[in-house]
Image (cartoon, rainbow, N blue to C red; front, side, top):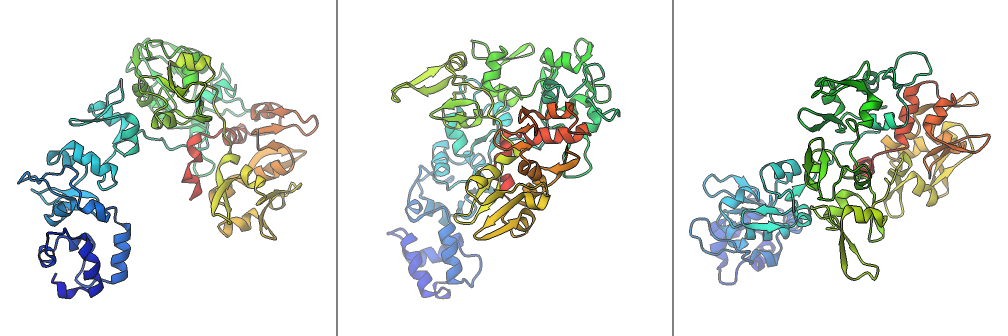
Amino acid sequence: MAPNCLPPELLFELVPFVPAKCAVPNVFSSCRLLHILLHSRVVKWKEWREKLKMNPIDDQMFNEYFGLKHPVTKQNITVNQAIANGLYQPETRKFINPNTGQEMDAFDSLEFYSAGSINRLVKRGALRVNTKDLAVALEFFFLDAIHGVFRLLEYEMSLPEALKYGYLKIPMEPETFSLTLSDCIEKNWINEQSGQFISRLGEPYTISHALHSDTDWPPPILKRNVREFFDSVTNAWLTITEAVNRGILNAETGIFTDRKSGRQMSLAAAHQRRLIQKPLTLTEAVERNVWSEGGRFQNGGTHHTLLQAINCGILDMDVRHILLGGETLSIREALEKGMLLPDGIIVSENAFGHNLEHMTLRMAYERSILRGRVRYTIFDLRGFKQEENLSLLSFNDAVKAKIVKICKSKSEKESVKFVRGHQMLSLEDAAKQGLVNPRLYKILTDPLGLRIKGTKLVLTSAVASSVLDTSKGVLVGLSNRREMSVRDAYAKGLFEDVGDALHLAALLDVHPSLLTPAMDA
């Protein structure tokens, strides 16, 4: 593209990006610098400015070397020179393979550039990384399973650094408003003899029923993607679907089969033997002696490091239970902050808030740093828009902020109102106007199957009737005002169908990963 094809103001703005010793005509003749932002011969000035504003490469970075060497000449080159030579594309933040002309991510670029220079560009946000999952990083030895050192050829970095800059990610499994089979066993939802859910209607309600759902809402009662079944042959933890497919769990009879010994047992017996257990917190790992003083997590006949235990599903990454620095953290958060080390050591400030103290999980447990699970309910999910600052609030926070008003009415439309200035809107109208998340609105107004004095309630009317305490996530008896679990309410006959009761139980104990902005859409 010749210089006279450009608006004079564009020519003026490009000059600061040109190295001092480089003549402007030479830059234009290469056509490389212009390709940073220009895709056609006719360029609108405003569009160019917007693209420049969004580009991660700033003026200073253009003329930095970052330790880059030309793949052919081996001479030191700046980012600007890499662009001019067709070696780097700043819009996609990727290097160009000099042999094929194809774009490369950070890992592929190691063939041509040093790990140190690549890492410096990644840290500045100028190079895109194809993130490695924990399983892949461990399998191919990018990540040391004991000390958590992430290796990029000769360059080494800590686990928090690898997580921060996108080299590594610990996947978060998609969650649903459902229960684990472990939850159902622990809370006596399942008849030990029949292996089926306790049904008041007299009809069998099997695990197969609990895994089935024809619609998006309500979801299946049981979670399908949580690894809570131990395969004694492979020493691996499986999901409920995998356990059924391998013959470990009979979804009709509720019989558990130990594949190694061939022994059959009830679900309660399998749970007692820890052949069925949902992923643990560090607190539970210490209490159940899954964690040993040698810093390993026991899994059948094998022993895993912390990172291996996370990878194979022994530990829950997202339940908050570690009290550090005045806040309660999950394993994921503690690892990212460097307050939980890959060798299972907790790092905490001492009583004076100065020196860091290192302690084992047992010591942390004895000092009450490791605590019980923090429980969340549907009323903790963000979905109410506060128009003053455009933030999204949970139901409980929206009530505190006075943008949601609880009215003493059993009517679905009258029980909870959205306050907008001097207006009082029904949740339905608020949802239509984009003030309430549609998915959350549907959940809050979906029939519960809970009957009080012959009236079938939804969540909002249960709250308005003072039958449901949103802060504690428990049901409350109308006559005696005593708190009770959903299981107790089911035993008292407040639910007809066990499926309805189980759905409410799931809504009053939601996994923390559901609190992420996925619900904010």
